[in-house]
Image 1: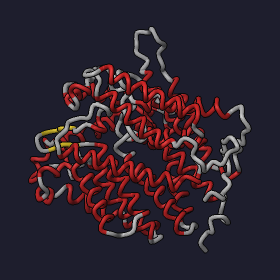
Image 2: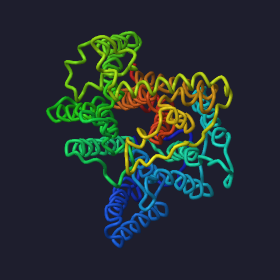
Image 3: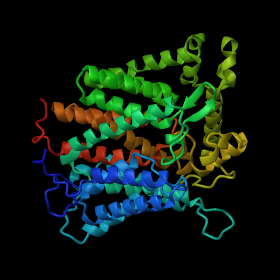
Image 4: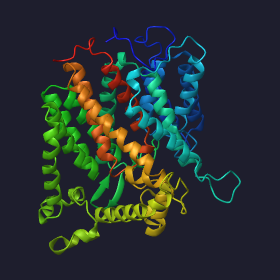
Length: 505
């Protein structure tokens, strides 16, 4: 694919962009190893810890000084996919500061050099405008109701920084990604998430509560009760591996084993959304592969209805107790008669909490229709590192709901955006998300096999995030914005090279 000329947002120093000068992915691996090692020796052998921390800083400076924009892209992209802690700073993540560092480096390093920064006409469309104005609302939210330092109220600056950090990620990835390395990127992506899947399953099976080098819940085994354990990263990595093998792997014994591994990931992670996503994505892949997505929109109601019926029927008791929470998706009021014993499960309590929080947020949205309520700070203190899920259980439900609403974590992206940023922001977000998914799918139908499967992959990624947005706040997640930038750029690159890509008739 090196013969393609990249349209729009072309930021380079005139050298061949397909040549990796430093190899940002290798630097990323070494960086993770050095940071992880420094954490492992923290409070045990501080001298060794500081030594490896120093090595990680040297690696970072080496990349910033000698790396190309592609090196920046590879390092930053994979950093956004992992929740690696900063040594000596508790639960703070590397991804909290690195996007800003790289954004500044990209602008300062390339801004005064020969630059070809053009916005081609194929970027000037309704999706781009919707995305741009949604980002405007992110900036407004950053300053909305902010308290100055020294005031009686904490500004909640960390939550605001998490939000504004998504802009640094998006534009850094958008400026540095080159279509020439898409094959390399996808190959690294598969190896990366396959490794995470194996590690997370080992953590679950070996009953390791937490790895000290990674941040809170992603890498923590969350123990709800004696029979229910959860690990978020196991489910995420399983779904990502599934999407890759569906799109790029031919049927073989090895592929079947990887598929089984990914199924075990969603089964043992205990996450209802990832478990449900696993089967929806398989169904969507079949529908897209056979180009019947229109009819599949109606057909998709069939597995959803079957899942609902199963969830509200005594059949759920035929599932081993360990996995019953995967089917308990409704509030406790739905479980009556023979299902009465499910009322007191942690899964039903979790659903109660979410429905109550969503109802309260929706009732308050009319009070701040245009720019939302903005971000605040929690009233209670939460010691996640020491107590895990118990940090939530010690707080009253009323205070907990108030804290989640203050910090924008309503566990539903659309409700959260409407509540925190306002109805216009919700409309813009929903519109560009849906339109980009449709654009990725429609573009895939016009491409020949290799490129078609790449767009299949991106379409399924967007579908996964669309499902995830129903029970999570993806507008805070850097990995979502990293993928968003790549998909956004790839769709319009492919649209701009119909001849070069030999569109199928």
